[in-house]
Length: 281
Ligand SMILES: [Zn+2]
Image (cartoon, rainbow, N blue to C red):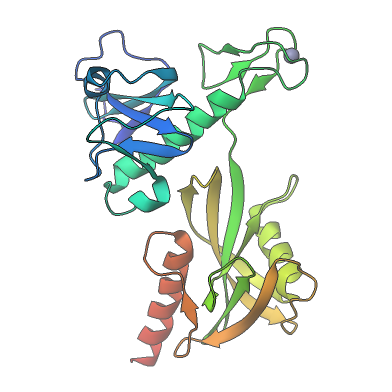
């Protein structure tokens, strides 16, 4: 018996022979998505009606019955009447979650295709694979896949306190939980321990996985963790980007980024709910 794919979107690199429904088209000018001002995604025929030309297109997969494609727009592209281009960060809340995630997938595939037309080793034109989402050099045989950068983000707790820091490029007064990229050869848990130490000189233990989030700005996979304070006192002098950091009590938290769209906020909210629930307030 055939069973249904367990997620709303079924990714694939090979387009259907008969598209059936008018496909959705995720067009990007630079990293901005072409949508209506109300956040409605256009279809291929709607885009065709406006005479919009794409530099290249990519098949993404199937959203229910609807095939989905991405397209790279010309550098001098101007949005036709009734459309705007928007950074995906501006579209949280105006696109539904599944469509927003699909747009995040699409922009990364468009960018990968745009920047891997030639081999990085010998300069030859690359060819699209028919077996998976890759391009490869016919000379070197080096496969090139879409880039994905794993990063960790961690809520460090010390009793009813949480470790928050601010980097110099944050808006004034805003703090956030700590984050950093995983380095080659390192586990995500090791990255948690290393980053927290590098940024604040705090040693953590009991590192536990919380959840993850695709974060297409530009190509991260955020791996969320909780961890417990073990030893040390906060010292940010050894990290050039960290302006200040401290442990804050759950009842006396500083300003953080508003909204509830990122795993950073989900981790902080989880901390607040657990601690305030415990104290019965
Ligand atoms: Zn090559």
